[in-house]
Image (tube, rainbow, N blue to C red; front, side, top):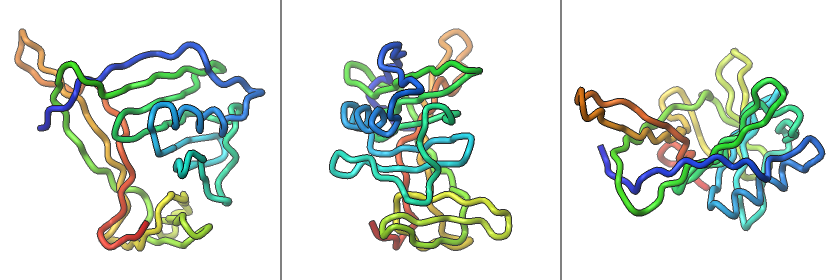
Length: 187
């Protein structure tokens, strides 16, 4: 278990995107301001990955459109923190978690395998991953060679808190940290 700067969670009530807003521009602005290079969105019409490159949010051409009206959940993330935008019923909410200095907290980083044991290059810098005959597809902002033993991974950080009365330890919060390629992949 590592010790890192304390996580600070804040709710952002202003600057929520409206249905008339350009969600790509909104995300790009948040990514630049908070130093969050990755985007992972779940929308009514698919999973959307993106990456901030030279202050521009880049997404694959085969991705669903990033629209306020179809977003279920959207995460902008990186080493410094995560911004989570989600919908419940018809209302949007946003939460920002940042690792800040001024204290420390125990954490565990864990890598999760992404769906996809086959890859196909898209747009020269994205790989469309598919999983056998299951029909599951998503396009990640990495160039990777994958197979059943080598897969792209999503790193998740779990923040651990001990209850001083019982001594029991529990995961207090979790957030996305990075997208990583299997060994031998290029960027």
